[in-house]
Length: 99
Image 1 (tube, rainbow, N blue to C red):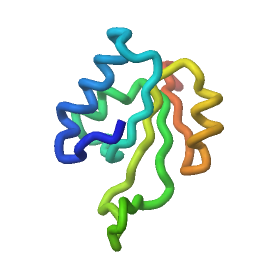
Image 2 (cartoon, one colour; image 1 turned 60 degrees about the vertical axis):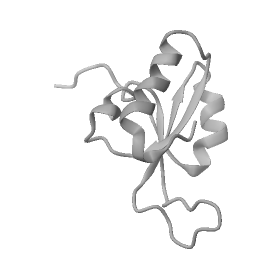
Image 3 (cartoon, one colour; image 1 turned 90 degrees about the horizontal axis):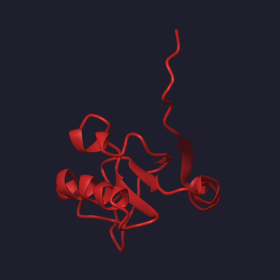
Image 4 (cartoon, one colour; image 1 turned 120 degrees about the horizontal axis):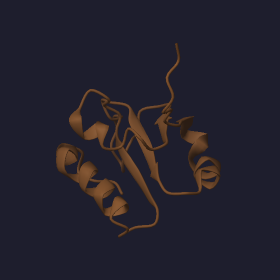
């Protein structure tokens, strides 16, 4: 899913809800990497790749003014990493606590 970036507040949590409800067995989201937002929290428990360069779309001359992330909602993390890992570093959520 590549949603309208100006409407992440609605689209990102909606996509997650569709996955959680079982309306999709797998989703890949291309989103703005912005961990300071509430909508980011809806995907924070899923693996993601920090894209290591600014993306350019279509025939546009300039790159996006922000970093992007590729979020994975699914069960085949190895396949996701094999396909999208070339774009950046894979991060997976950690539920433990270090002391």
